[in-house]
Structures are given as C-alpha cells and as structure tokens.
Amino acid sequence: MTSARQILSSGPYGDSKTITEDASSFMGLVDDLLHDATGIRLPDTDEGPPLAQRSIRRGLIKDAYRALTIRKDVSEARLIMTAGLRIADGTTPRNEVVVPGFRYVLAGDWADDAAGRAVQDRISKDLSPHTCSYVAAAEGEARQMADGISLLMNSVGDLGASVLDTVSGAVLVTDCPIDSAFLMPVPCASIINTRLLADPVALADAVFHESCHQKLYDILLCRRVVNEGYGFLDGVLFDVPWRPIGGKKRQMDCLRILSTLHVYAHLLEFLLSMEGDMEGGSMSLESRLEEYWRRASFFLELSRTATLRNGLGSDAGDMADWLDSAMVQHRASFMDREFYADSFYRDEALRQVAAVSASF
Image: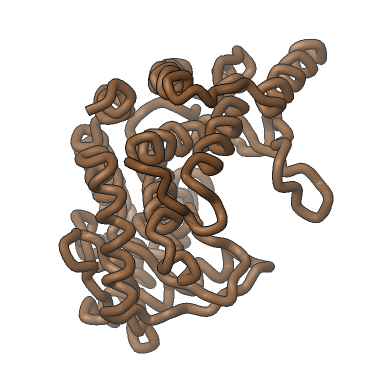
C-alpha cells in the first residue's frame, strides 16, 4: 500500500467504515425526528441495494428534513414522507442488474418502477437544460462495468472498494453531453454515460470519481466541514481556468474547491497505481496524469488559504491538511517519474488568492 493510499484510507475523513457508521447514525436520528413530527417512517433500505429505492428514500428524507428544520413546515414534510410511502409500494428491485463480482448494480428497465421513475425525474431536473436518454442495463453493460471496476480494484484495492461501497451503483445514460455525474438530489447513485463502457480506464476513473463525491457527501453529514446554513454562492468564488462554458469561466465556492481536491487526490492514486502506459480513450495514462496533477495543484493552493478555511466549518482546515498530506505523497511519485512540473494552473490559483487577499 502506498503512503498516499494509507492516508486516504484512514482517519476521520478517510476511514470509510467509521464515516459510514457515523453517517448512518445521523440518518437514524433524522428518521426519528421525522417520525415524531409526521408519524411516518419510510421503509429502511439505506444499508445497500436496491439502487432506486435507496437513492429516492435518502433524497426524500433530506427534502423532508429541510422542510421541517429550515422552513418549519410540518405539513410539507408530511407530504414528502407520504409520497415516499407511495413510491416504496411501487418499487420492484428486480429491475436492477448486478455487476458480476461486485456489490454494484445498474439501473434496468424502470418504466414500471415508481422509485426508478422518481430517480430519473430527479436526474432530468438537475441536469436541465441538458437532456439525456436512460439506458436499461443488461448483462453486456454489466460485464463492461465489471471490467472497469476490476481495473480500479486491481489498482487501489481496499481504497476503491470502500469508496464504491458508499453508492449502490449507477444509472446509465446516453444522448447526453456529460460523461458522468454525481447529483446531490440523487444520493447513493452515479450517472454514467454509456460511451465510457468500452474504455475501462475512463470508466474506472468515472466510477471512482462519482463515488468519491458520495463519500464527501457522507462526510458532510457527520463532520463539521461546513457550518449550518452554508450558502454555496454567498462567500468567495474562484474562477476555474479550464473548460469555460459558453465563453465564461466556471466559478466554484469554497466547499466545491475542497470537494474537487478530494476527488483528484483519489484519482491520482488510482492512475499512479496503474501499471504500464495503458491507453484511456483519447488520453494516454501519462497525459491524463499530468492534466489531473495540474488541476489538483490549482485546488491544493486554494485549499491552503485562510479564505477557504475560514469560509467553511471547524473541521475544514483539518480535512484540507489531510488532503494536503496525500498530495505531498503524490508529488513525490511525480518527481520519481521525472515529469513533475508546476503549471500555470497553480500560478493562476496563487494570482486569485492574492487578488482575494487584496480585496479585504
């Protein structure tokens, strides 16, 4: 096990078993609170598949909790929980395909599955104005997914398994501009474009990437990374210096900066652990590594600033330091490979930090 992998697998932000247990305890308290307020408790499927029911249950509980605690609206919370009962009654777990060899399932034909349709509705709403078509997975897609997950497990072992355990599986889409996504209204599920299925490196990358987002979401439930009532657009925003949309640079708040660094720290461990210069679709392993390092360096510099740490919760600085220690190990691996170099992404981060500091 590499030093970086040991870091990413341990401690309050890496030990998936402890994080899962703590997040489950928190969700149990929320269940009790909602039951006391509404008289309703949704069927418990939070410990694993089926994919659709686990995702929609957790999503609805979050919605009801926000209605109850933020808007103080018991009637709205009760309506949400009642909808959850109707969905649970119309759910058929048979309509999901198990990926051979793994605790990971793919959405099947959800046309007659109430939970599945509800999940698809949430995906479509969150991806708007982008559109997508949903693919009912069969054995062929499950075998291709097994190839990608096997590559991930052979590279990072227990780290990959523990991160993937935070989700039940994936919804496959096509006719969509995105390659993959994690959507907060659709917890415990990854969205994967079928065009990745033929490319095990890109597929493993996407599966790991989106599961890392879910792990971070679980961390937010049980660690004080953000303060109560955190507003995503209320604080400092940083410009991302690559892949502008519509000619305009994307902006990220402090939490998304930390979340994205969390993903890249894990993806770098996966890519650095792969043996040989395998091809990843249009990107070679080396070019993928170099681009990810440059991007990670951008987020790393921002995570070191008082601006980011003061904009989040009391545990944010500790989590940033934890990620920093993993990135130090990655940097040593890059230097051993003799193609490490600082980049304009890092320089741009330093420029933005200086500009923010000067504005106060």
